[in-house]
View (tube, helix red, strand yellow):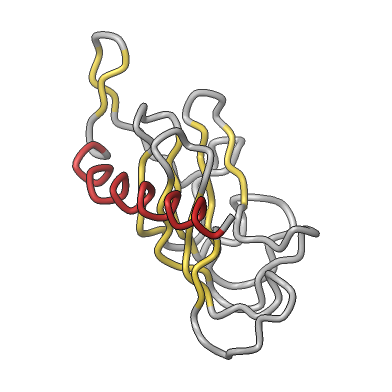
Length: 141
């Protein structure tokens, strides 16, 4: 399992490196398309800054960090990681523990795998996985 996550991390970092080159203008069909992705599922802009975007290989999924607390319902903590599905028009909070608990510290520097299935990010949160007691930044996948 560790090997698969490391492979996913490497793939996501490669996508992040090249995703930034593709982010500004994409071509779906014959029309160039630029749109703002740091929005809620209803299309409303967030009330705070968003940064650090990474794009899946086909351009469908964009992962980004944001300080906005209104991109999803019940977001009550600090900076989070979100995935925007550009095809379905949905925005999902992904920097959560398996039980849905919000991170107790900011989540930063996201990357997404080429197929859009996996997201990696950094956080000092100690409540995302059991036994995280090192009081330091960790990479979550």
